[in-house]
Length: 207
Image 1: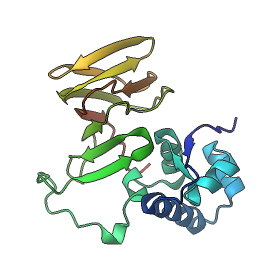
Image 2: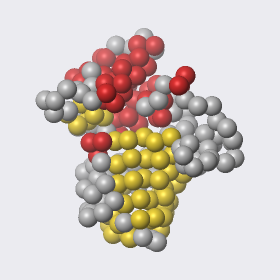
Image 3: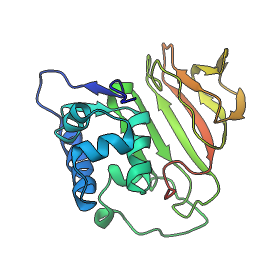
Image 4: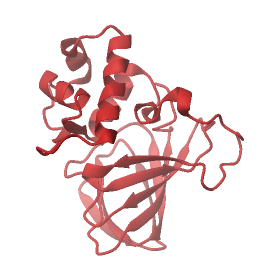
């Protein structure tokens, strides 16, 4: 069934530069593979209308939608946000220096992900998820292969895994199988920062 709820429509204001560039990159990936919007819709389970809005910068794709497009295109998710030619070459395959981490932002969800693992990550990936008040993964739980764990560095947030839920605060940790539907949300009032580890890598891997 075609999913029509995996993007947030942009308001009547003109699309931001980030939204416009994301749409252009996604369109380029589709055109490079010779896919029509209808063919991409069939492979990704996203509606043609929604895909068109995303490519024109008129809707912001959710994490779930980006994950489906990543699976179709077979590229690391980070490629949707940075031009490969403009990315700095990895300096070290063992150490990731402060200030050199890639950052992926999701303005509509009020979260950002700082990818703190070296670009050579193969089996697992670390990131710092920064959640502004009322930010999170969205109202619908999602699932994927692998396992994940984390440690709260700052603030607090709510975590749902399956039918259970918790409020975690600074110093708390968690771990669960990623195939179990899950979601997270920062109730505020301050920013939450969580060191989050996933396996296999979600942003650095090629499917």
